[in-house]
Length: 113
Image (cartoon, rainbow, N blue to C red; front, top):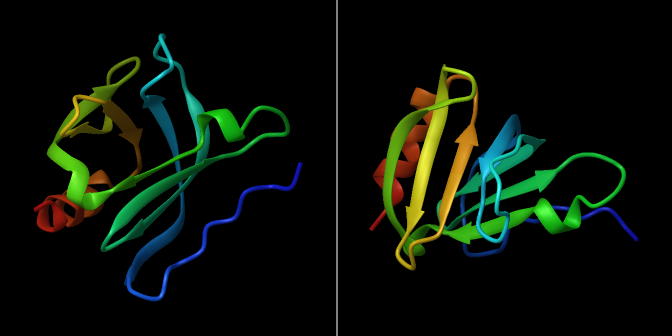
């Protein structure tokens, strides 16, 4: 299977790409586990492409900014201050772990409608 690639759409502005980080929580995964990968941020969506050889497609995701309900900072295991918790309007939650989270937290907060 070909590796998934992120592409910027014609109607969106890229803020940051290939930002290394981890995802600790995502819908449809019953336990909190660390998945490493790269984040991509545009004014319309956030994408996470998991890295690794096998099974990365099932833990990669993309969300629309317009579907985000709340965003707040949080801790990631064991007690690191790198987390951003995104709650979607449908109740789904994503826990991102990114160094320099303040920059990304503020940017996401500004783009949530």
